[in-house]
Length: 449
Image (tube, rainbow, N blue to C red):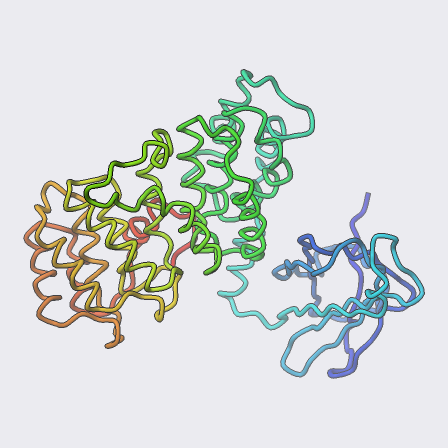
């Protein structure tokens, strides 16, 4: 069998003139991700628009375009192409007025969807495109391992295929820390196809939540990640199925922490609303409601998740910070100092500058952390580095005297030297510090901007 490409813009086509690929119509899937492979030739080719061209060594593959075309169903379309003067190929899918799939609504007739390809790539852009699209040969047995657990044919709930899923994936792909961004997103796609199968057993649900978050972390970095995060968040309203299982609850909160950077303000507010009843301190003189803070809900993971909600409004961050401060004052709790550092960070991971807490509040939190025994609370030094970090924005940065004290405290605690340097001068985060900010290692090859 031979693989052919379709010629959409013949060699020598005039710039600025729109052309239709004659004699061919196509079915365009709407509301689902589509991927277009693009090829180009630097030499003379005799083909004209609409011809099928066998893939050979004369054709160079360019980075693919991945997108989600809004709508539902399948639209019958014709292809229109335009080579612009700035080196881009505009490819439009124009709904065929004479044909329409039954699943596509009448309003779709004559609709137009424009896609845009960058033809004049820089080397860096080509590297980024290749890093997302390249998959190892071992991806197929890894996909089969996921489908065995979350495919159409149910597996016995006690089957080793369920509990050994991580082991089987690492057997095929190697240690999970070495999985590339492309591998992670590909596994997410296979897993998502069986999302409703997570309800089969507590192990099914726990492993689904773990793998879903791991494969989509940190919620950005690859084409279509915004769509993937949007799809994943549809699970939030459905909630946990096996709600008596502590391990399932832990995996649930970890999922949202892992992809929080890819979620929007509304999603962060919804998550905040869900964890607020469990993290808000009980007023003095009132007995805690045991039903409100039921055991097994993974409170420590809620605390870490709270720190990842950078797109909360500053007022909500102030309230959340007060809860964390209370927890620190009543005794060291896992993840609390880390979460406070994330909420008050001068340079957010994914949030906007206007969502940062006011510097006078960050200064109060910093003073609290500086008063802790940094030898005992091992999370506090990095939280201090985040709160006192120099951003270069006077509206966010703390005063110099306080930053000097913070840098000196880190040096006295023998924290990594780059933490104190990041307080004295504007610096990029190193790879290890990216992991500390995020909470775990990022996919291989992905770095935070």
